[in-house]
Image 1 (cartoon, one colour):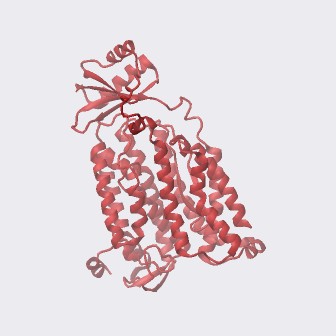
Image 2 (cartoon, rainbow, N blue to C red):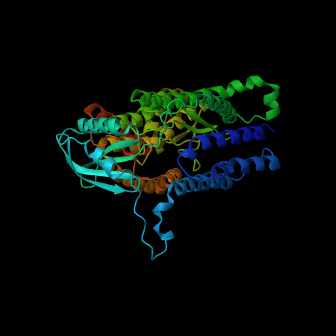
Length: 478
């Protein structure tokens, strides 16, 4: 009965999150998105009502958690495609209508006056679908040019347009004007009430998950002995600390660069790990590539630094067991640390000479929380699209080079799935994700040396987490 009540409450909160968050990015119906994302929970609830505590088949659970997220992302992306971009719906004998003009002829003359010849020598203005591209030659540094033109546009048109300075494929810098659809008071509605409610609910679901990880406890036992909840708090507090620090780092960096952002939203799940993460919704483009880099690198590095001591403490309190064919990187009862270079090094640091390369680990619940933090760090550091790693490589190497790195990464992760089947779901997620990141307003100014060094460190962390320990190195190290 408790599981059913949690599922109902989670369904209500999921609907609110989708309506306030995802619904602003897609035209797909909210009820359809809710039904797709809640299908695993509804199916598991029906299973519990019919079969009680008997666990469903693994293929049943695996199918739900692979198929439903893929369908969900496909429906979201399908809703983001405007109907005007589908010329096949027009009669073949009728020419496609011209793109709507963002400005009248008189306003375009005012726009030309926003480009001083000593800053940006404007040559022509090209009208496209819901945007205007101003071609010319850059006569000043990108930062000075963007700041000057942006101030001039705001003095003439207010906050009606976003001014974006970016490079074309041939490397020529162009100014692009697009409508500013973000309301002026967007930063006032941060959603802290909903964030606190989701935090409390996620704290409860992760505590229940921690109880299941330390032992099989029935609901009557839990009701008769509420003190048993303490056994699940170690895992719960560790997970919540990692997620909270990570998302608060994103939020703090957004505030530092004056970017409107929502409060951290936690995602509770009343089974398995108790949560599937948290997120902060960024409501406006980054002002420049430095801000874009800071937004991307702050969360993963903060989460990684918090995860390290948690993993080390948890591994020190884990048990060594015999290595079997069922041992693997994501088997918490028989974890094979050789699937990750970093995990082998941390296991050696925590267990000392007692740790041998031919043994597996029965993870302590706190170690599971720390490993979850490392998994989330690695997933978000993948240099693809709008993931944190995508922001990092975009800021370091530019939009087009960042997209190329994203495509290479998807191929490499797909190849890794043949070696380590646990990465198959990652490969599927990355394949369906766009490799191109949204540009910053000043998408031309480059980073400084400190940020370049931090970006390389972040990529090294990613490699240490996802790559398996080479046999030759492990033999000499251990």
